[in-house]
Image (tube, rainbow, N blue to C red; front, top):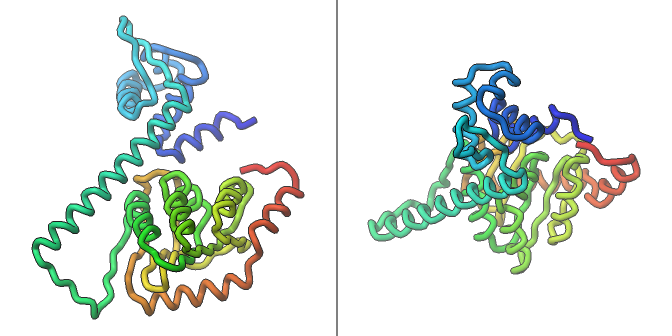
Length: 278
């Protein structure tokens, strides 16, 4: 059974601040409380508790009573998490809508970008990464190659990238990937295999992470330090449509592919070791 600190860590990974995670967990565990009781139990000031509660109410994780003194209660965990995911999906859809509007305005303006020189873009957050990756997957025609860290697999599952990959494969695309498959993502990895993505395990991989679409467009990062699974988490990645760089990454991928082992083999080995932890 997971201990209190593990649950709180998972909440922080989902996008909570430390204070929000502690307060929400306290309400889940001990039930509805007024601000005075919460401040005493958490050994902090009532003003701090009030600010944290306001943030949690805005996010949909806490509700308040109408009677006085006001009592605060944790919203059911499954309901709250589903609501948060829908909100993030809505934000991504809105970004995609604005992107399409900008494309239309660009056509009306008659912009003429040169095709001679490759373009580059720095990706600065998980939200931006997802907003760029989903269209990259859906617009690909033949093949996508990728090498990603564990947290990128979780992010792809939560925010729609895997769904886009499933559609890509169903219309005839081929996708191969490499990841250091840990016990915590065995279930996700099996789901990836089930939709037709050919994925392999590379033990303790520490090189460049990247994805290449049709050997033309790529997203890459030397170091992806993802501390929490949240759309607002900062990252530094490079998107480019430079075909020469894409070819270099594809060549690197093929070298690593022959050194890695099939995911099914890795999963079988982990299952033989005993119960899967995190």
